[in-house]
Each structure stands twice: as structure tokens, then as C-alpha cells.
Image 1: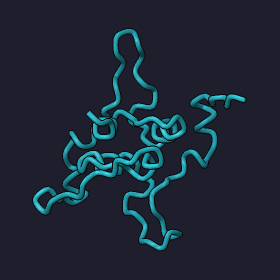
Image 2: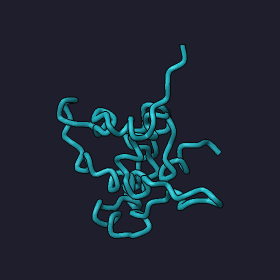
Image 3: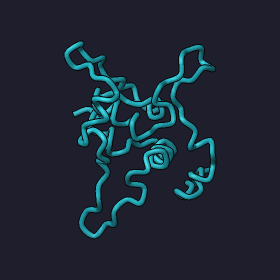
Length: 128
């Protein structure tokens, strides 16, 4: 029997789908400083070309550790408007703009449910 796909609204109504999948104390490691800060988390991972934990469940791509020359503080990464910009499409042709643009937590929940990558990280998760 085929599984019924949920609507975006149904996905977002379930708090479990919105829960941050980042490491927390329950795994015996210190909590991530960006836990629950989805926009900042995405900017950080996009800068280092890595996949956030919330999207790793359906990829083997992990990213590469930065060299000392590439290393930046979170503040330096977040200060650059290019790193913080939502890269979701603003509507192509007759298609309307995505209503979840700039709503990172909701966008990630929907993409995780459908096992697809948001535009903000797809550029380094697809082999070229």
C-alpha cells in the first residue's frame, strides 16, 4: 500500500518535524551553539560546504574540514550578507515565490520529510 504524502501544512503541524536534529546533550556531546538557529546554521554549513545534521539522514556527503586559513568565527560568517541570504528561488517564470523563503526551520522540515535538499545546500550535495 502506497504511503500518502502530507501537505506542507500537515508536515508543519507536527512538532516532531520542526524539532532540531542537531547534536544535543543527550548524545554525550556539548550542545551545538547554533542549535535551533536554522538560518545561522545553514549559513555556517553553506560557508564550509557541509551538510547540516538535520539533512544528513539521506546523504553520505559530509563536507570537508576547513583549513586554518579558511576558518572563520560564526560572527565573521554571519556578518557577510551573502552568507545570510536565502538562496531559494524567488519564483521562476509563472511560478510564485516560495512561501517558505527566509523561513528556514519550516523549509528544512518540509525538505527533510520529502528527503530532498533545500536550494541553500543542494549546490554541494549533488555530485557533478
